[in-house]
Length: 266
Image (cartoon, rainbow, N blue to C red; front, top):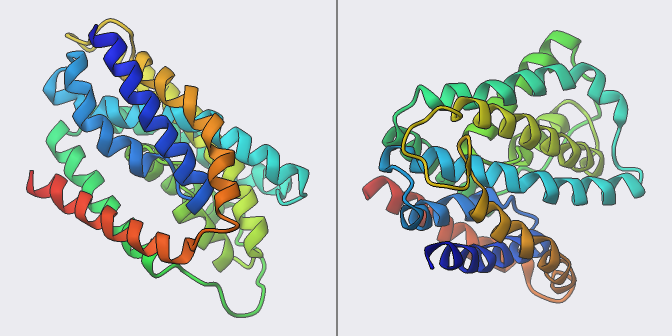
């Protein structure tokens, strides 16, 4: 009965994640992680591991959603695949390490860290970065490696794809916006893939995890989320052409601010 309840609730959550992603272009982790913090206790996840499992499960769900986004950007020629040569190593290393870093952080501290991240993202959504200035040459390999690794670590630690950080960085480096967004979508898929693998390995021998756990990833919740998010995302994208998305983004930013503060206050 508990398993069916979790599947049903996470299917509803997946629909909300997919629709919001299509409508507002936001990462699903900003919605999924806070919701999973309240859903996972039903499954019997140990209290101290709930933030780790919420983040890991959200990250795993991003693999498919980022793949769909990256495929669409590739069809429109918006992905500069040459960027992967200097940035892929840093992305892989940073994302893989995130699970082991998260294991060293107490659950309560990790939850509060996510709350701060949510608050910062709400500010970014309300007042988005708009690139200005003349195009510049991309930095050398060491800079791209360090930047991609840092973005991957933080993104995977927070259970998001990293677009909110990668896109401004690439725009500052001189890449045009649509190319930055396109590359970020493909890079987000790799962050989610390697980050999920890190969380699986880091959580493999954790005691007390419920049946259906794969490391720190809780598979029933993951199944519920991905079952509906992929189906509903196109509806959100269609609604974006007629709904006042600029106003909705500011409303959603205010809700994120409230969620972040609620998590911190407890």
